Amino acid sequence: MASTEVETIDTGWVREPADAPSARFGWHGVARKSIAIASFVTALILLAMLKGNHEGHVEDIYLIIIAVFLIGYTVYSMIPRKGVWKR
Image (cartoon, rainbow, N blue to C red; front, side, top):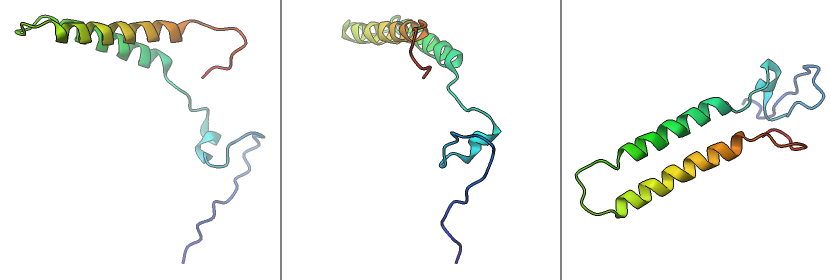
């Protein structure tokens, strides 16, 4: 039967996480620009849904609130902060 233990690979990095052996191939982080572009495009699509064949404005309120939240959070996350580790 095969062993379930993970063998340790010495890559020369002192702080390499044991559960992420792919870290030895390079840092794998978050694509911030791609996420920002995707959220802006999503907000524009939500605002484009305002034009439609619905008569009530309850849907419009929800679309606007979600689009404003997306744009606001994206702009907030793009502001550089001093003394904070990059997430």
